[in-house]
Image (cartoon, rainbow, N blue to C red; front, side, top):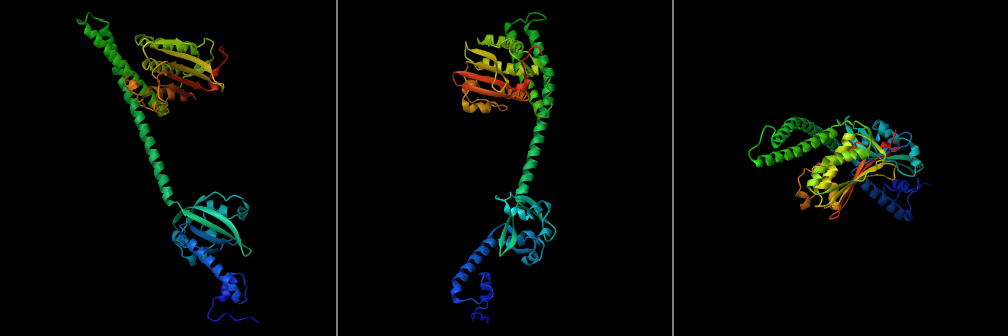
Length: 408
């Protein structure tokens, strides 16, 4: 005969079922276990309701929602009663249907979160990142979905994309402007340099005062310096907008080095700097744009002379590297560069804060341009330097640009 519930305790049978005592009435000896179970359930429910993530629990197979927390009500615009009458599948978009696979519960590691848009009660969208877990209770299998609101994150990502696109557009506009302005400046500047040369040479008669000749030389030097700066800006802007074409051919590095040295010999002679050409005549050829490689080499030679000491030297050599590529190296006995400054001087307009370097003219574009010219050939630039000892710069080119058969 079934014993009546304890007087004054109408929930005894319900609580007994919760703790697994079936339909039996609760004995006094069961109360400690019952109280512990209820406290555990209350703590679990408190934890469930306090979390900011929406949590839905559904039966596997029928996919009927059997439990939901307050955050689920808030995010999905549905009351708990409305949620408990729903089929979970009616709320899930296609990306989240992957969680409706019970085999997921057999995986050792939890599946990575999946992004998806829940359909709210009013038809609007709830952007969420969802985790899933399969579990068993009383021989029944359940799916627990935890959905984190990522609306703010998506807005931030969208704003970041827009800002990046605007920055790229502004950079392209800047590069186009520099390319157009640089082109327009070159023509009148060449005229200034040409007329200064005519004045210095006294083409139409004597000047009357030798100081005019000095002024004409100053005009030429300043004009050539400005022309080189404009040329560098034009090349950098072309590289940035992707309008930089390479006219590639097999280059004899010994001949190209000799030609580059010839162009800077006068400048080196006035500075009393010796230039040593150590490139072997039998060195492998390089498949590249000769004009651009020569341009890079001249920039390095000019830097080697400019930042050197009276009576110093600049040395050019070519060597094969361990990965099968080839390296063109320019080293000098100059003032050197601090190690922490090396990354900075490779940036556009980057210059060292060393007073000895600051005392020399230059916009800080030379090494940045060299870096870009080498990289468009698939190579890289490496700099080693010791203050007071000198600098060694290596332009490394990949193996597929090396032609070892010089007759090819």
